[in-house]
Image 1 (tube, rainbow, N blue to C red):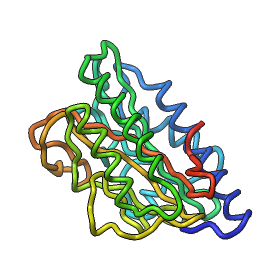
Image 2 (image 1 turned 30 degrees about the vertical axis):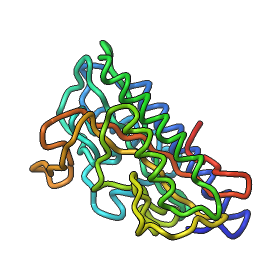
Image 3 (image 1 turned 180 degrees about the vertical axis):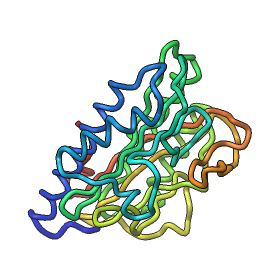
Length: 247
């Protein structure tokens, strides 16, 4: 989506803030002993009470309201009976629709006791996103975002999962352009003012390939190494990227 009016910007700001607030609620609520289904219910209640709907359910028939991926699970984790354990690394991914606008964001929650590796993983996810924002400028090529993410991930000794990428968003979940997390010369589209994209560093503690679980949705690392996912929806403006889902 490319924003062309104040009305469209206001619509994206509303759903962006709501997604951000939902992430904050869910992150605060996540504790050892609760199931991922219970955590998903907290997000669902918060969003539905404010008139929002689950975009993954609408677009793909996803079985949960939000995506909850734990430890080696990378993305698209299906909420269910799995109980959260001390030391778990949870990726909370919320994509919601309100009044025809869609925003997408993800944060990590580290349950104590937090390992040194998990702490480094989360710190790298945040810093990789921050570096990506340096490149998220009108006139730059999309590939420059991936260059920044990959450089930061490698600096921390981790590895980008190249089969997963960011994307355009706004009227539906997945729109053009694709936003890789590595330098891909084919990603030569230029960022334009008003363009809405979801930037999402996704990587693992070591080299890994993706495996789909039997539920047909959850993707995990083949060697079960820890994975990270951090994401925000942003608008490209003359003054730099405007984060819509950060609260």
